[in-house]
Length: 498
Image (tube, rainbow, N blue to C red):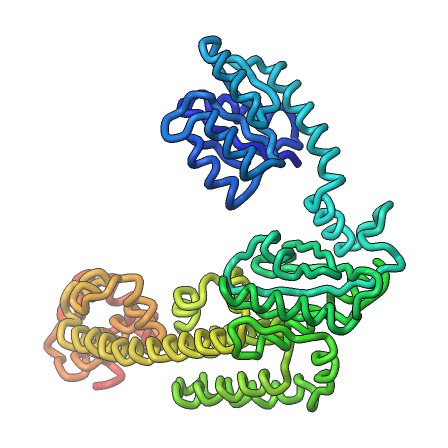
């Protein structure tokens, strides 16, 4: 894939060039378009690219200045100048600053395609000799893809490091931090803020001191920029153990997860010595979950906090892999949503959408901040639900009181909601949750009971008058509704209770 960035101060031309580049090949990616050279260079510093296509005349920073900067700061990036006829001499000057080609305005599609093909060919050849190509081969090898050329010689020793960081780190930074006189490194991005650094040891290098020196150098360098959890594999020979050793390094990084230092390195030897485990986690967790669910069911915030503290302490004692810990935290949220009405809505706000929660938890590369963040939000959710339920009971009681005193009036959901300062949909859901019946059914029940009282105590009232007094001016509807609820007509009921 060829990453191409475009700079031109005219939006129409920027869009047109981007469209032409995309149409030239599926292997061309327009990584960014910019209105001036300064924006382009800022992007290159952060994201990188293979080819720059830039107008020669732009505000802030023109194409010639871009070419000069590329030559000094990004010597591997190819530059193509776009110029008008009047700028031809200016463009020739730019050719001295790493500019590989130029295009005349208006840009001819065939000419652009030719230039891009030549660039792609040059870059493909150059990548064979660069660390970018080596990183790509390493990524493929780690994924299990076969390669004609092994990423490390069969007779060479190497060590994997897995690095989890609080903030994104450049691969060059990782390689520079790990490199020593007797090693050479290659860094790859594995997941968001998780990196793999492969160190190939020179012949004669110590299989103990060299890997540990590089690991501690990584931790020291990263402390200046971000927090990090770093784990190392045991030294291994050749590419056959590449994936197995990476898993070793991941396990070691999991041990670093529980340390309190800002950036901590755990050698493989230390991680291996800690492999002995207490009783099976599943046995302990099953017992713990029972108590956790009980505390959820009664909304006991203090007990829930105690259970969470017990859980996190057990995870730290066992040094469980971060992935296992996070899966169990997801399980806790699912249990809370199942056991506690209204928790799902709070969890959506406090922990994010259900399908993004693992991603949210994975932001934490260390145990301490994750424990604090999760516990605080769990307790906040429980407190909110308890407060809402307390207020909910008051709102439901208010609606019941309104119905008791005004059942004979023309009541509807909208009017009731307005009187208790809630939305109709929320009041409807709340009333059903607290009473087990809808507001409509509750109102009907009250009216029918009042009608039965009148039929017993007021023989002078006609059936239609009873209906009017309980809120049903339509006599036929009242009779039909009464029979459906009571099982007999108002007159039949009156005959029975006389």
